[in-house]
Image (cartoon, rainbow, N blue to C red; front, side, top):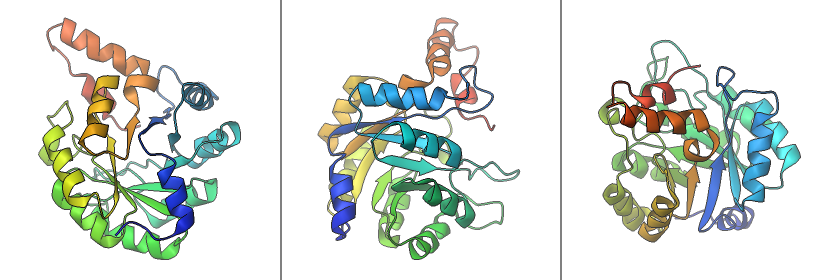
Length: 249
């Protein structure tokens, strides 16, 4: 069942039918400046976003100080030999929590961590350690969504569809599979659409399919990747813009 905690429900319900903008900047991005993440968040708030998704304790703190919107926080950490990079350890969860994010996102897929453990094993440990936090499960398929809900995730999104071995070649969201998740899990958790949403029409479609809210990142806040999508197609797909999107930093 969805959380019975009234404080958590009020916050999550405030996101209903809204746009959450992912405002993330990596140091090697061509748009990287010391305050770019803050400017992104301020622009998102001005434009009517209901929430922000942000990476790293520093950027979370900066954004929380600048805009009065709920933050889905994560901490990207890459380790050799593992594709698990979204808040991969309990220490990373703690850092996001201490930075002030109301919602904590973490990898809840079957992918193996650098220790050789399934990523989803962290979720129950994080819930036990930080019971007042809201947890956002990043998954890639129906089965992973079902497990995350069983383990207690408050919010679930197919964020990692396209980032796991079984889904690596996709470029568009799977509307039919997302609708199935919303039908089967909508009474038990808050289903969020995140990943491969490039137009307002796609966002509206996801709300129609049952999304509680929609997260959009690259199409709004990463103009270098938006440009690369255009040039890749116009040049006959000689390169793949998603290689840049999925690169480690």
